[in-house]
Image: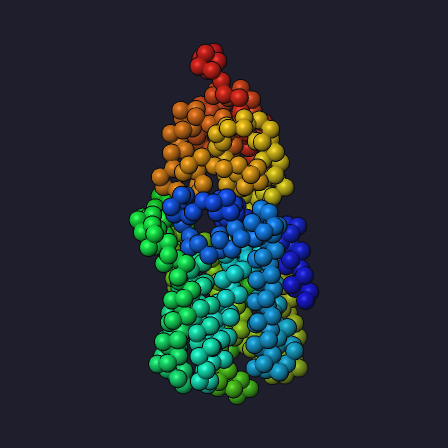
Length: 455
């Protein structure tokens, strides 16, 4: 309860990440009748954006609502993890350790409590795992069918979760008592979860191919994002105090010959670690890698790590002090939140975005054309110009329009090379300056005439 309350509070008062605005704006546009892929560029599967769009339709567009949804998904994941560990160990301490490893993780706090699909994915990945292991000795169809649906739902929300489907399918085929029947039911559940995405594929195959496949294969990696960038991002997660402890204690649990963990439970923990391992492999070859992608590993390492730590606790009284030290060290990993936030994106929040959006609303004519980042469009409740709904759109004509002075209002960082290259300060009479993370940010308005530019 304490961790859940802390996550929800953080989501409402502090949480912010620039890339979440992609999903917020997409959901807002869907709620206004736009369709992803067909009407605007969107390089993710549709489930999360549509879920937010439904909430926006019911309660109005709000980043707080999106944050609350993500925090509730993470809180539900904590309950699933705690319940599983308690059912296998019958020790409250074990369940508490597992929930701390999950809920007090810096990357979970930063990236699973915002309008990104990680909270949803964490919940349904863990649910799929629990349904799969729970149906191992049962002949009923509900368990494997629901496991497949939950696993498929995560993939149709975020493609990096695909290993969950693969590993669980292999497990059903090789380890499950009712192999063929359960594997087929699992596959059927996955297929049902894929139906919304398949509907888009059937309606707009070329657009879906361009946004979801072609973009990631050919456009996603910038020229400055190379192998060393990927290795650095991988190291940020694995060599952090929290990442290192999760990996080390998971390995210690699985390699130990302790008879305290029943064979059935150990088999389930190996399955959990296998999911984490294959997830890590896929994430590590992404183009490019970002350290926060590894948040997806957290629950599947927290499960075996919690059992590994509890073996220390029960081994000898002197090890209890070591357990305490390790848990304190893990919790102190939260102190890295500010550094992670600065490293992974601009150090701003929704309050700064709202102040920029307010100025944009004041200086822009009712039918004016705005150049801004997605969070400003969302906060100001403005529809972006065609092609500017997503800054990753490889077909965007933003640069051509900036050069030609087509925008009535321009929101841009002072350090952006386009300011000098396109002479933006000469194109507009009015300039409002904001301080963001120690750097100037401009809101340019009131287009200058040709004569004014020549003076």
